[in-house]
View: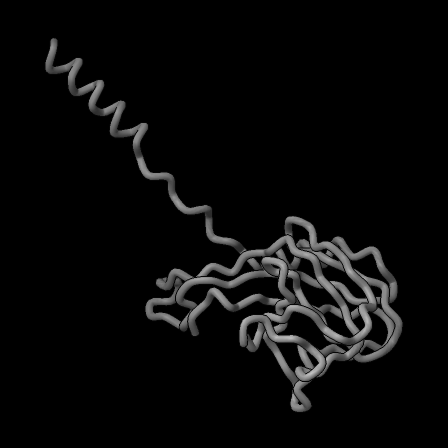
Length: 168
């Protein structure tokens, strides 16, 4: 009887001490589709802010990497088209900036699913995501424009993916 009690107690301790598993893998394609249904604008930009982390190299067999691509709730800042030399790099970074010297056109908060939308006039813009108090802009065009977009009219989808925690 004592042995049985011992094994029951030991089993209970083992089960209660079980390591918590990582959060479930994010289904970014489903998030993109769900966010498309949230658009309420008739003119402007909308999209999803997301973050990739881990080893995101293609793998064999498919799906064997630890890459996670999940929506991210962040502030999105839309500036007049900004060149790299119009931004102050943060600690010699090429993707994080302390500020942009160009005009801030709009600032919106993405929801828990990374969804954001903004009504903006036609023009050329740079989009930055606020990450740890810094402006994150990881893409450039041929003229050194940071996270550039050109918007004319109607609706335009603009997905912003933060990749600084990922390896490719």
